Image (cartoon, rainbow, N blue to C red):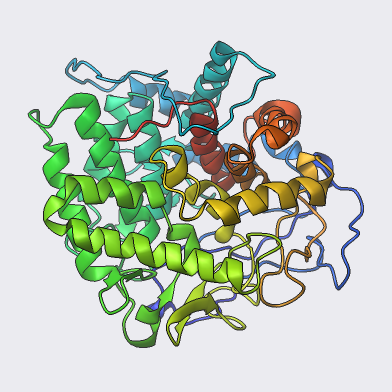
Length: 479
C-alpha cells in the first residue's frame, strides 16, 4: 500500500487503495462536465483504513458472496459459527430498558418511509443486524469481541465504535460487554481512556500496530455507546457504564479537542499544524449534545465544540457549497474560518472533496435536528436533499462515490460508480427534505435494504447502513 503521509503522524481512518467499478449496483452514464475517474484505473489511496469495494469489478451484488479469504483463512473460519459462539457466551440476565424496537418521535417535519410498514422496517433492521454480526464479529485472540474490517484479521477503533453503538441500540448486552472488554485491552499510549486505532492478530493475540495512538471518530462512538449502555442496563452492575463514558469523554476533550478553536482534531496524535485540522465525518452532532448533557461540568466546552462544527458547516455552505450542501473530507483553519484542505492532507488528492470520509456527513449532521430540534445546520442539509434528488433524477444508484467540493466544480462527480457508503447516508438526509423528498426517501429505503445492495457488501458500507436503518426506521433514541 502506498502511504501518502508518514505513519508516525497518523491516527486515522481512511480510504485505502481500492479499485472497483460498481456497475452491478447502479451505473449509467455521467452527465457531469470535467474528468471522471473510474474504479478500474484510478486507485483510492489512503493512509489507514480500507473503505469501499476492494476488488476490481466487484459490484455490490457480487460482494454478497463469501470472501475467498474468509474460506482460506483457518484462523478466521466459519463466521456464522463464530457469531453463534459469541451470542452463546455466558451472561447474567439484565433487563434491557429500551429493547429493540424502541420507537421515538423525531422533530416535527421529519419524514419516514411510507411505502413500508413499521414492522417491516423493524424486521429489516433485525435481518441486517444478524447478518452484520455473522459477517463481522470475531473473538479471535481471546481478548473479547472485535469487528472484522478487512481480510487480514485486523480491526480499527472506527469499526469498534460502530459495533458498540449498534449492540447498545439492539439491546445486545453480551456482545456489548465483550466489545467493551476488548476496548479496555487496547488503550492509546497518549489518551489513557482512548482506543488505540488499529490491532492485528499476531502470536495468538490481537496486538496494537502502526502507531499506538487514537482516531477521534472511534472514541466519539465508544463514549456515546457507553451512555446508551447506561440507559439500557444501568451502571450498578459489573461495568459502571456512565463512569466509563465520562472517562472517555474527558480524554476526548483533553487529547482530541483543540481548545484554542474548539475543533475536533483527527486524533490524540495531532499537534502543531495538525491540531488546526478537523474532519467533518467526526461532526457527530447528536453525540456532542449528549456529552454536554451527561458531562455537565464540561457542558460549556462541549457546546463550544458543537458551535465550531456549526460554524464550519455554515461557512462552507455560504462559501462554495451553496448549491449542494456538500462537506469535504478534511478542513483546516484559515483566518477565523474553516475551509476545505488543498491537495493531499492525509489520504488522497480528494481530501478537500466529498469522498470516503465525508460521505457520512449527510447522516451525522442530521442528528441534532432529528432528535434535538436544532435548526442551525438545517439549511445546508435541506439543500443537499433537494440537490442530490435532482442530480440523480430520483435514482439511488445514481449517487456517485465522490463529488468535488474544492478541487473541481462543486457537486460534479469525479467517479462513475455508486457505493453503499455514499447511498445509505442520503436516506437520513432525505428525512429532512419534507414532503417533496418522500418518494426519494422511499426509493432510498428500498435500495439500501435489498433493492440494489445485498445483506453483505463490505465492512464500511454495511456498518454505515446499519446506523442508517436504525435512524430511518425511527429507532434512534437519545441517552
